[in-house]
Structures are given as C-alpha cells and as structure tokens.
Image 1 (cartoon, helix red, strand yellow):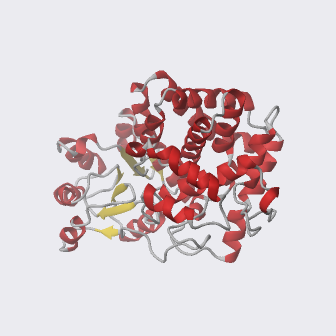
Image 2 (cartoon, rainbow, N blue to C red):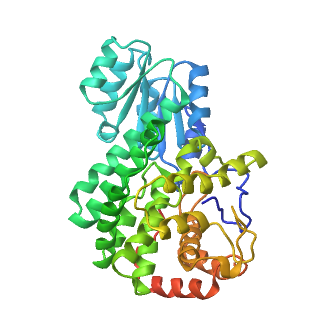
Length: 402
C-alpha cells in the first residue's frame, strides 16, 4: 500500500531521511556521525573513480544510507565515526595496493571483519574475483545494470537476516521460510507464465496461523525487521496482523487461513513494479501513481489464475484499497458493497503502511497510527477500527515498528 504519514494518498514527503555522503578525510564525517537514527541500511562503497562512485551513490542513495570512499585506508580510518555498514562494496582497483589488500585491511579490523562484502571487477578471471568467491562473497562484473546491483545487494542483506531464522521455534520458522520462498519464486513463475500454487500458500499460512494461535506472532514481526524486500515485509506483517485480528474476532480453521492468505497475497501484483518506483522518495507523477494503483488489478489477475484459491482471498486483494465513501480504487465501491473481510484488510493494510519503515519515511508509532485511523471515517469502518485497537491493547509490547 502506498501511504505516508499524511492522510493524502500517493503523496510522498519531498525528501528522504538521511543523506548520501561522500566521505574522505574531511569535516563532513564528524557531522555525519551525529546522525544516530537511520531509517535505511548503511552501505559503504570503496571505489577509486569519482564518476563510478557518483553513479553508485546515485543508484543506491534512495534506498540505502550510503557512505563512499576512494581508498580502503580512508574507509578503515573513517568508518568508526559511522554506523557499522550492513554491506561493503569494494572495487578491485582500490588504491594504494588493490582490492585484495583492501579486503585484508578490512579483515584485520575487529568490527569490519564481520561485515559482508561485495566485489566489483572487470574480469571473471582476476585474483580479486577468485579471492572473494573463495570466501563466498558475490562479485559484480563490470559493466553491470542497476537491477543487477539491487539484486546482488538485496540478496546479501536478506541472506544474513534469514540465516537467523534457523534458531526460531518450528511454527514461526516454518511460516517465515515458506512465505519468503513463495515471494522469491513469484517473479520466476510470472516469467514462465505459471500460476502460484495455492497449496504452497495454504501450507505457509498454516504455520503462520499456528504461530498466532500459540501467541508467538511477535516473533514473526520482529524477525522480518531489516529484511530488504519491502513488499514481502509489508505482506507478512499484514498477514500476521490480519490473522491475529481474525483470531481475536473468533475466526477459526479455514476462515482464519483465508484471511492470512489474503493478507500474504494482497500486494503480489507489486512484483511487476520496478523497485525504484516502489521506493521513490519524492512525489509520484500522475503516470507513476496510475502504475502503482494498477497493482490491485494485476494481483487479482494473478489470483484468478490459481487453482482452488478461496474467493475470500481474491476479495481481500481486490477491495483492500476501496473506501466506504466510494473514493477508493480500483472499482470505487461504496458502503454496503464492501465485503467485511475487505474492511478488515483495509484497516490492517493502512496500519501496516503507517507503521512500516520505508526508505523515504520513518515509521509512525502504533498509537499515533491508530489515532489517525480513527479519523478516517470516510475510508475505514469505524466500528472495526475500534475493535482492531482493542485487540492490539494486549499486544502493545510487540508493536515496535519494522
């Protein structure tokens, strides 16, 4: 869902928190160190060519909190003034002695030695490439596309986080691993013209419902914090909160599985929207907003191709952006035409969007989000909003934003 801390949909703040930094041994490193609160993962680039360094900063600056250096020595000396990077991207030509020497210097630092690395090189056969791949680190061979850069960086960030799921209890671990596997497979299925197997969705949501029934859904929410696939994070949060809401209202069995599956799949049409548009920090143009809104129709088309998908799942996906006063989309449904499941989903979707952390905004606190939602009487069902607020009162300790 595209919603900001203002009530006006489709309008994003004119700037993103955090600025892109090109750090050397200058005074700006100290000034940047004062910014302790970061809403985007910190990424460090070591690239000796100014033009290439500028291109990388431009590509990553909207999504990540970027610091960049010309040499490995500068990076090792200056990085203690910054947050520990989530990933370091190192070029093979890094002066003064090349990328391999820079990697060794990073490895000798007691903090930086644990930071995942991505290499950049001009040839597959270089010693630098063999060194990194021998350590299990990905390497980008120049020239590479922006999409390839995003894919490599995101995969490394999520790999580190998802490895921590192995320590979880079986129900939340199964829910997370199965749901993320579905999201990872969706682009391939689209390219191959194949439907998403609903049996896999149902199986993953059974683990999610089990976690909710056993009161451990807070583990699900906490375990996706920092995951780099925003659509997945938002969807698993909506599925979890919607299952919890349904559970507290008395839904059981297949009905509870339906609302969980509806939450998980409600935004799958966004996989066709470029990552740069999904995370654009500025105001969307009319054409961009039209494309963004089109994810609902795309989602319903994908669901209609699936075998055995309950109509409730399709209803949740198709109606979660409709509003009581008829000003929603895509069909402009009004009042009694809105399904009860869709009304529940609209509430959870708005709550999730307001309390999600995005590259272009900090999350709203749960209480502030609920206060705002109680004023959305032309949009949300006020009775269900009050019930949703009541169900969350007992779960206040786990409502920290992602």
